[in-house]
Amino acid sequence: MIELSRDTLVFSFPEVHPTARLTVSFQRTLRLPDNGRDYPLPPGFGGFPLRHVDDFAGNLPAEWPKHGGVLLPMRQAEAMWLSFRPDYLGDHATAYPFAIKIAAGKINAVSGGPWARPLARDPQDYVVAPRQPWLDGFNVQQGTVRQFVAMPLGEGYSAEEQLTGAAEHGGLQFLVAPMRAEAFARRFPKIVRRREVGTAMGIMDCVPSCPAPAAPAAMGLAPGGRMRQEIYDDPHRPDEWDEAQASRCFVHLLNSAHWRAATGDEPPPSPVTAQAYAQAGLPWFEYYDEKARPVGGSGILAGLKSLAAMATSKRKPLPNNASVAPGAIQVIHAPPRRDNVVRESGDW
Picture 1 (cartoon, rainbow, N blue to C red):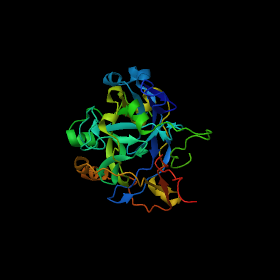
Picture 2: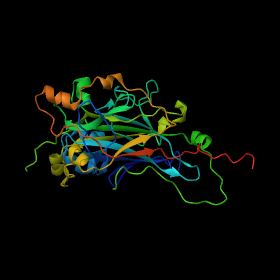
Picture 3: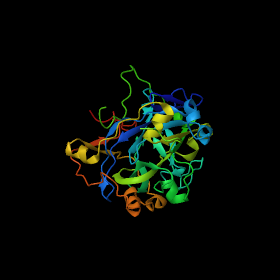
Picture 4: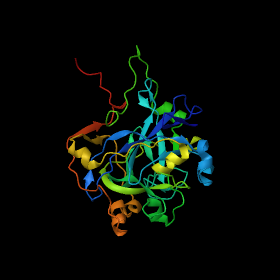
């Protein structure tokens, strides 16, 4: 079951486990300079609004309601990152695990391959939560992604158009598969305590938190600036994922003017530029999980032209693309897992 709750997508699988629940949010952020330099993680400025496609079917292209899913507004050349938050089970000392496949215009954001339902391991074409708390872009090489940046579909910028030559799908596509109940019980047995205290600690947010055209303009995601981010390998066996119970969701991207025309709601304001953010001396971020192993980058995605390169070839220089010097960088470590147990025996 997929629910839209407070501008987030909530994937829940009560038939697998009562607390098998994953929340996916779409975060506004800085668009990094696209100049070949690797930048640390930018901040989040809060979530994008989401709306049910079915509520506005009469204002949308006929094929969109066929896909179902939700609508999300993005301005041209605006960036986003994806946040994955599985529910934490205090009596098992872990968050419930999920395999998450993400595609942009039905191009897999991890492997670069076309959309396919089965999970693939060689190369891995999905991420695993809670090991992977977020994803900011296309996996172009080990330890580096190119930021998700929205551009009008049909102008040749998107990953979809570069790889297929067609502007057919746009948007984002998700497939979420929970861990099998028996695998979860085996890997994470319930902890018996003399007294229950407290509850879970999750990953913190990075920072505290005209007449409209007649036809909606679809948006696709293009590869933007380079960012230091690892995509971690799957530590579980392939048969531990319950793919038969997997849920899919199509996230349609609208530009801000068409969002207003289709829904009657105001889109979020224009985001701050990376230059203004850096000049203000605000923090950037690095995320580390010392126990996780990164997967390799996709040769397919590495071959994509970046947004700035595409803009230059079209003689339309990318605005606000000057280099910046990130100031204070805050290091975020993965939360402790149940294998970080202090040994109790020994000579006293």
